[in-house]
Image (cartoon, rainbow, N blue to C red; front, side, top):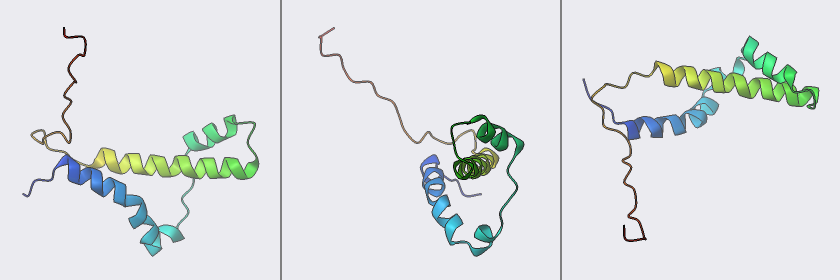
Length: 93
């Protein structure tokens, strides 16, 4: 099985919204909002009805993206995409 790096996964995730817009089937379907998205949008009393509908749609899209990310299987031996290297202190300590 070919290995895939975390950096490649990150690039794929960044390209996912553009691919979703290009797919004709994805744009045609309008899924029902989740109960969580409807609850969050209803709690925002200062928003207009149009803004609440857009918020509900945005939360639904975020939920779908998170579902895809959570379902992606990253092997335990995959190297991290970045390494933290702290800078030296300027105080000479």
